[in-house]
Length: 299
Ligand SMILES: [Zn+2]
Image (tube, rainbow, N blue to C red; front, side, top):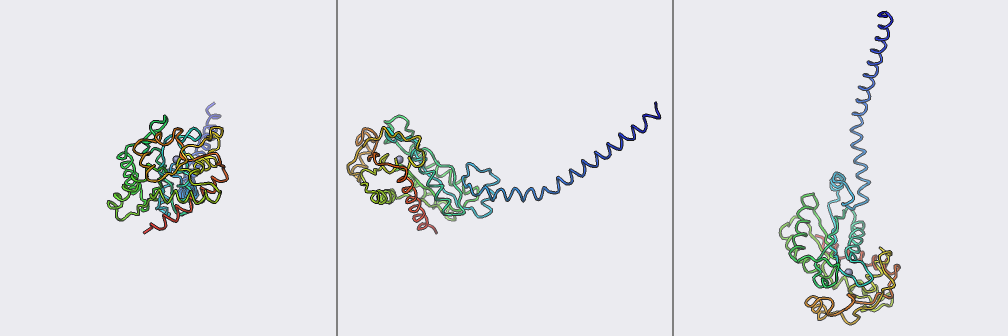
């Protein structure tokens, strides 16, 4: 029995040595390409830069993008507020997010930070679903965004407010932040009149008057939402809201007394001529306008 078992033992030992050697070699082979694995990761990071939405990227990929020159970042400032009976409360946030993405793509070497989804909407609060920040809260959110983005390695930060109530506070906060961080480019397209002029110029091309195009949930915003989120637009509820002039006097009424003082259904404008095709054109024009304004402000 002993004589028979020892060759078996020897065989077992041989197998064990072969397996051991194989494992060692495999380990060496595996650790060797670790260097090229890193290269592979790098090239994957280059690919992932194409997505540019930081919220969808990993931290190492964002780091790698910054190292490759993606040192600019765009942030939209949206709102969560009533948009009449036919548009969702995320309208400004959705449009801002889309425009920030298009702007970042066109600027090149630019990432998009997650959109600020709630803004200063006090004048809409009598309509349920509206969530409003105090001016001071939005100021602090913007300052914290800036501090975080600078810490991460960005040196050019662009804010795009997409809701009327946010413009003054974004403008003031960016000025404050620029003084605090002179070495960083802090830019904002914060002239609401120019933005509305851009929309109205596009409306005029479609034969739509500025008062129909509207400042809130009118034809222009409705068209854009039809282009972006057609399933969230309730067409059979399209109805005109306030279609008079929206000048300084009217804006004062809105901000001091709230939207219902001017419009019962929460709409400024008339959505009935809205279409997705027009929405695409509005998005193109707004993107071009924002790029022009950003380039004007670049150091
Ligand atoms: Zn809006």
